[in-house]
Length: 499
Image 1 (spheres, helix red, strand yellow):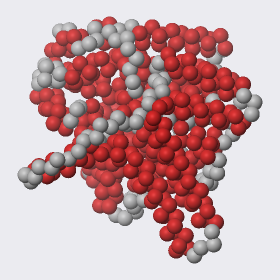
Image 2 (cartoon, rainbow, N blue to C red; image 1 turned 45 degrees about the vertical axis):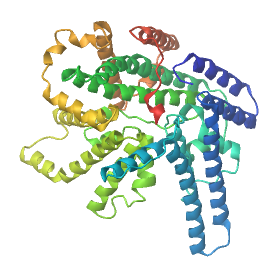
Image 3 (spheres, one colour; image 1 turned 120 degrees about the vertical axis):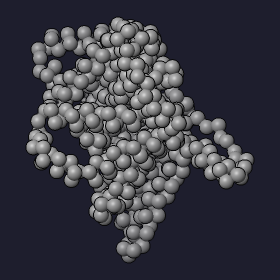
Image 4 (cartoon, rainbow, N blue to C red; image 1 turned 180 degrees about the vertical axis):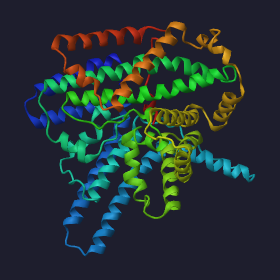
């Protein structure tokens, strides 16, 4: 069930109405749990078994960890038992994830290796459909096991309450990946209707729908045309399409996260902020502190720091950072292009840190002011170019195609297509193309406000009630109008559902 579908616009009000009418807290939880499973089963009912399996394994691991902690054991045995339980939880959950997401990729890699040494293997191939959101809920469930192991949260004894934590429908299939110490504790106390939460949640959802329906889906038309035939649409066509893709994936994923935050807020639940004006970052490292924050922080807490973080020398620090970003690329998809994308972002940061003394020296010699607007703008532009270049590998069908596109970007000189009207023959006519540009300007304005710690929804809420509701009504009408206006009328899935 997509957020941008009629089904969800019917489903969500029903869930809300029943949830707030029910007086009993326990029944409220069970209703929310049933609704969450129904939401997930709308894609494929059979795959509910997978999320239930992951839930049961991690729930059981938490109970066993608690029992071991309370048992009268010598410290060596206690540590051994606890590590064994965590290992069992990790291996079983990651094993399920591996089978559904990486088994065919692994078989293909093995076949290529043996073919390279002139050995032909008759390897099997599995016809497997990737369960939607499996990477998200698997990581969320595993974080619970690790948190209990580290004594950062209690072991939840109520299975149904824990199952709701893993399957909470607003953020189930595309995040944000919530931590147990935040979401589990909030779900333990069902909320009554609160008008302030409702008002803020509606504003968040409206903004999320604007990002997805008006910006991301419109840009996708142009991007699909150019990337679908990049041998014809080379040079500046690809440059514009790649810039548009940077905006599309931000609006698509950021739109989902914002709608999820809004839906949860209406239910009285605060989800973590997943994006914080990332394209205004002055470094790639800064970008990754503001992009997909829930995943970046997950890898930091459960992979980077356990590997040693920055505590064991610079070389080990750089290796740990590269490892995290290579794994992050693989998390996004079983393709070498995703691994390349992750490796590029890791390499950017490692090279940036190595060259930091040189950059500091240049700033000193040239008497530059790092706090000046011009200096920051240059760094923002440079960061965007580097990040956007890596997006080519994320969007392309493979590494070979990505390199072909990058070659075209740097070698095909057809700047004239921006001025002779040719750019309007890529799926978006002139009106829709410039509407997209205007909407990107609105997004930039909103991000600048966020960067300056100005919350636009707080400004709206502070207005008189009639003006506030006029803004809301006008925004809804404009989304319906602008979201429907254009060459495509089909609702589009969210990009991150495939991960």
